Image (cartoon, rainbow, N blue to C red; front, side, top):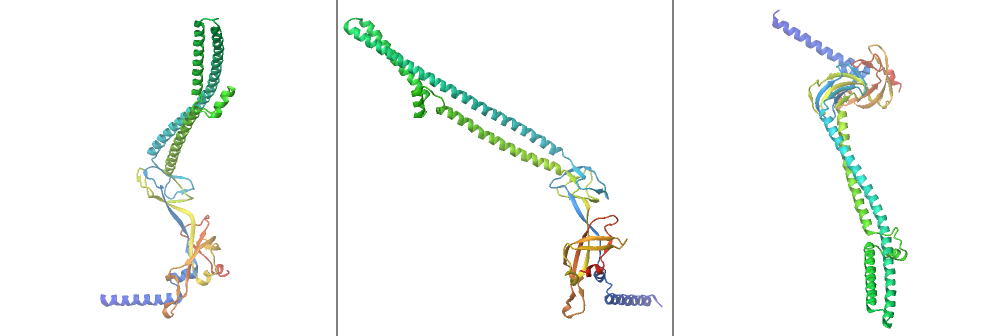
Length: 378
């Protein structure tokens, strides 16, 4: 038999075997989809997360982990260079200290200003009272000089005193009158801007305590305006504190920590490399483990999210408790189809995802099977 005939015969044999095997799979339901539906088994899978430095990049200076290493939540994994951030923090802290000094100095000046104003106010009260006493004294002197002049004038009319003595009395009276006017002018100047009530109080009793003094009030208003400057400085300080907090957060993000317990699958960045912001540097396998099974719509209708499902590890027959996380329609290829008009499916398949708690001897990649009776009892 020549080579050509042998090749033809081998090809025919292979075709026949392939055809018969396909028919057997269809008739007996041993294809992959049918087995998944029949066995209710799935591969245990662990969720994986890609870790990155959040919104920050830089040179990687420290790597604290190795591949396949188990880590706990909060463990330090990697650290970026913090030199620039440290310098910025120091500069802001210096600016905040300077701002505190300015605020303290301004508050001190305001307190001293109020104290001085109160002192000046009390002194002014006493000066007004003293000036009122001076006015009263000048008026008393004027009254005495008026009496003296009147006596001298009467005596001069009778020839008892000389005209020169009368002139002297007249001159003294004029001096006393001028002094009254001068003292009254000074008192009016001190009371300038005061209301009628304040002036009446001083003129009636000679007591100037607690009267309104516009000059003192203006000084207090000027000092009060400085308080707005303090508020402005405090707002500037608050802005610096916010900027400092941002830098501190930025520095914290230079240290990459494990977000949860897991195992390091892959280290993408190496020490000394420049890491881009939000670029994955570590692939972490978490402790969140699940497996998927496929059921027909009759079984799916009896299940609910949160239901407890007990499966068995095929490798060691260990029971594994889990809870249904979601139930969703499976892709069309997983439907159970038979020969029908228009190719309609007899039964739709549903994907059931079951999350399990990690336990000893339970490893990702193991097959977990759910017994039919565990589902049919529902």
